[in-house]
Length: 253
Image 1 (cartoon, rainbow, N blue to C red):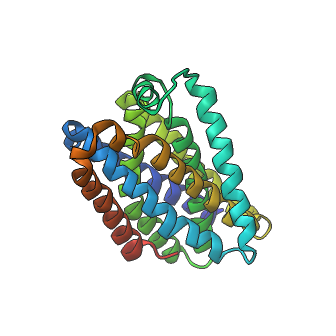
Image 2: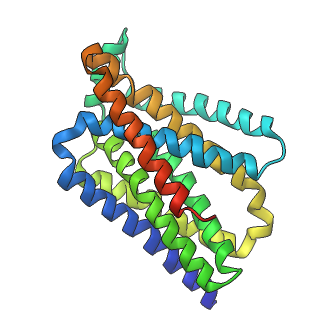
């Protein structure tokens, strides 16, 4: 039981600290730069999806077309979720983007879903590390916490853009982060039986991040006009660089 208690503690510490630190960064320093941060978060989410989640999914699964089907189904499902929660009647892109600023939860619902899958998978991976050795488990938890911070900053930007208040965004991120604890406990007791689900969880998370970046964040470039194109591209690329540097240097599993 000592091992499972350490797993629970490690997942709580890893998730909660990364979310609180990301919240401090987002709320205290990024508030006046919302448009730039939306571009930055788009780069963060795309980079995490393409350079981290999808490679992990393919690495853990021998049949690549199953991952492709998971991505397709996830994107279609998220489209349905977004339409259900938005309920808009806009007829063009500009109107849809304007409504996304007013709607409570547009985009935010999908990003929380993808983040929950990602956190669940991280919990399973922390559990697997603890089953090798406690020291490896804690190192893995700290590494996950460190590389989650830039991604959580992106999540906060999406939630704020979707109409969430700061308090609600923090609470929803914490609830989403709690799935890491669930993943850790399940991983400890049923790791051999549920390990085949890991690549699918990675694929669903990747689909969510890609979908939100392309459907909810990057259309801001269309809304703001061509004169801001290079500035926005700079921050998208900067988000990619930050995410890649964080995951490459700190993500050990």
